[in-house]
Image (cartoon, rainbow, N blue to C red; front, top):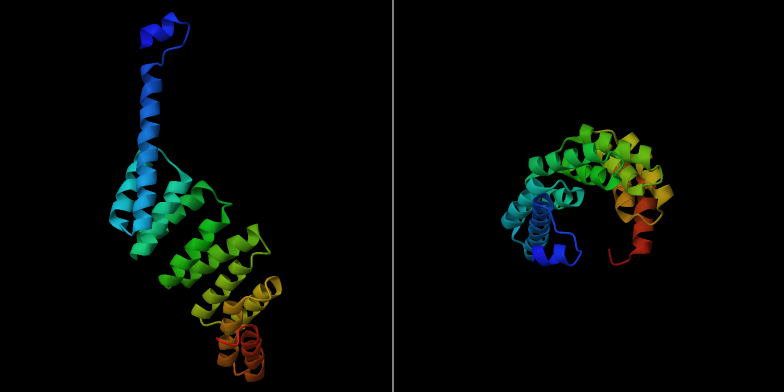
Length: 195
């Protein structure tokens, strides 16, 4: 085939180009097989596929899928390791920090959770989820006053943030501020009477 291509004026592929093309194709097969396995709930196979894909080519998206898979499997240390690698690779990608916050929360590492949430706030001051996660870290560290302050900030950014209202009500109850807690609970009930 290469003879005809060169004879007709076409350019033949070099051996290096052929290897790169083959490696790219293998990478894509492993990545998409991993995604299918993840959707089917075959997490061990998904990890194997994503790991093989990353051995062929570094890819931020694939590493994110691997972190999600580890998280679903309950392998928090592995998920955290992947997320920390992603943060080093792209230090302004806020979703990686938010996912890291959730992993740290499950590991009860509230100081690291607070650091990750604060980094998101530095990058996106208007991110209500980051303020909420920072409040959860404050709550985990036994600081209800800062918890309420960060939840208030989250609610200023997103007024209908039910989880933030409920957590703020809990923190206010811990502080003995029952009427303020009742205000939050009433707001939740008026928004969702079936809750």
